[in-house]
Length: 315
Image (cartoon, rainbow, N blue to C red; front, side):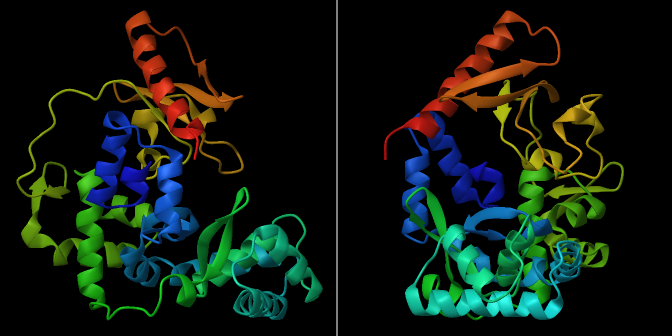
């Protein structure tokens, strides 16, 4: 999860450490507390874990286009544009006065401003504050991650490169984890326009190589030999977000993507989904789609122990 959501090779090394030196969720919490990593709504309006220096250019590239969808969802929840503005202003004022706050605390504050907070209204108001570059998720407060102001948590924005440079960097980062791919794949994964996707690939041209079928990849990358060993992938794993067509991975197992847009955790074997999984009382539970051979099941059980250690190791 870290390797793909953080969109950075450093995060990939953290993921490897999870296998080799006992990286746990507590380690990630410490990185969040130290502000080297940050969580907020970015690509496609999905919560992402990214390096703090990457927040600035990713926020600029991937959030403006989210405003239309956010306004539509707020309207569906009975929140008018004036109420949405009032809710965001109340959030900013409260955090400015009293520091980071949890969702529960902000619910009371937004409701006191006479703004609807029922059903999904509050989460879309919180998302709007992030889209506008006002808030990110900050310190851990009890069992929750609090919301804080960008200016307080990350400081003043650095001097940013031009848009063309940002798009080329986005294209290279995407292909590092998803190549070979094409402009439509990049547009879908990043939530940017097809035109911007093509601009990014053109700008990164010197670092790319053509592949059959109109695809691109990073230049000089060695072809992978064989498929990875069986893995347990998390909910919303970018493997299912990185290309236009998910059929090669899912086959007929469309239940992994639910009708309300939730992407369930699943087991990947030879490039195909073979089971979903979840956790109950700190233990991983597999729900196979069919029989799984004993050697593969043993690999998945080893994966499960790693996941359990990552999640349950003491802080």
